[in-house]
Length: 220
Image 1: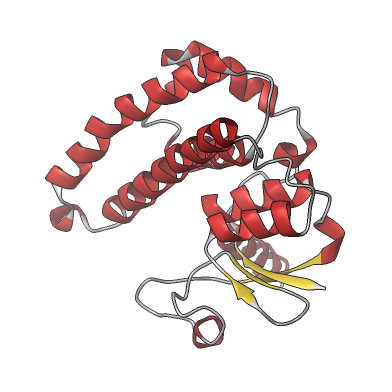
Image 2: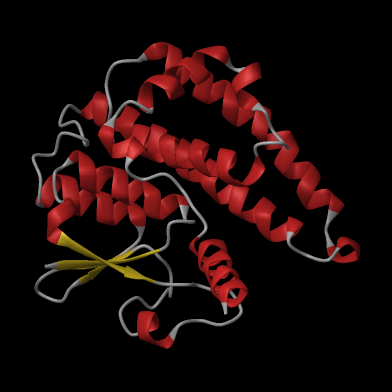
């Protein structure tokens, strides 16, 4: 059985899990929970992935595959039928462009979260302003993608789903995008009907564990 080192908070993990469900490999993968802190690299994960990042996939033969782009390619093209990586050059280029757009938005949001997590006096106003300058450009491109092809679903769409889901998970009050980009919002609502998307919704396992511990203490 393959092993996937993961966290339900990561947009890149969600992209991989969407692909896992799309290619029908959910029962072939053991999920290994992993909490990653930028200031405390995990020794066990570093032994498998020198980048110390999730997602990391370990095959049945013990080969570690990283990052999410390579994992999605392996699961879909090597282990699956390659449906999410179209064989026609133009179609594959478009899918990879969409993946870059989704992944780029995820990285931007992670950087925003990191900056926002700093103490008030240590936050960089310039970095936060740069995030807000980029977001409208990214969303105009996403709106165009949604209008151009609303029916197909490829690895790029999986990346976009993960990024938009992460935005709603972490920043819903800060950037109400669905009101501003109606075609993208319509595409997003349609994507929610896919089993792969419904099965991979973000949640904070650390907050869930903390709430459970509090309830146990309350009953003690």
